[in-house]
Image 1: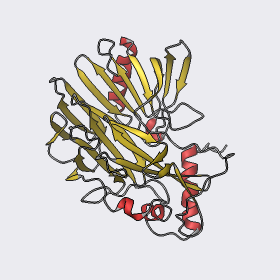
Image 2: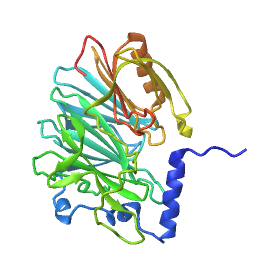
Image 3: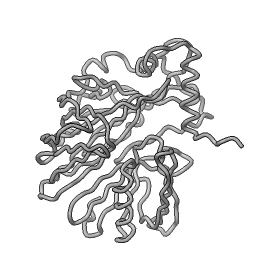
Length: 345
């Protein structure tokens, strides 16, 4: 009996075969650049970031000024812990995967709060995404809002060329590229009010998303795909909820083997719904707001995430889902739960 392959693994294998077919030896980032449709001037002035060096699982704890005060980075072999306080003195905590991270900071959304960017390599082969990017944009009250993306980002010692300010309004945009059905698809996400909003339609004299055809040689010519093609491009925005209701139960899975957990929910209108956050990218995040502060945990931090999900169910907290990995199946990127006594989600 043959083992069923995960669809994302099939996609990665397909990209690897394409890479071999055209004898491409450059990194995936260089390969992607050959299909990047924006003119060079758009990238000549990347968004200004302050480099903060790197932090490793064996590094000593380190305090960095961001948000409403100081953020304490505490590396451990199993996790990277971030702790701080908001403007009201309430604590927040963030648990991330234990990795070597490159750190930056800047006020990405121009709201007066200094934000944080963390990045690590994926070690993907062929045309698999090269870097995992995590941002913590701080709200006006000093609480962090998480966002994750795995893509073809270029991380340099002095900054990230994929973070730009295309419309010159002082707010950052993130270039996010993906490949599907013979097309490179360029999307843009804009930082605003501590959220990343997906840009659709006309923006800075460009119409997003942008499409370029995959060919045997570099091709930056924009095209309009046939209307009959339906692209399952991920929607990563954490600005507008895709679901509002409650979490009724969940079923854990072996996420270390790319199995997807199951969330059973009930919408405000009483309709039941099941969702399976995609474990392959490890970007799914749970955030809980309650009287004693804010807690955030990513999927790789299994004990912490299960603890948060258990509390959400027990206390019947209000839940919102953000992001969508698949247009056919509910695969959210963020579950944001809040105590009814703090209805500020």
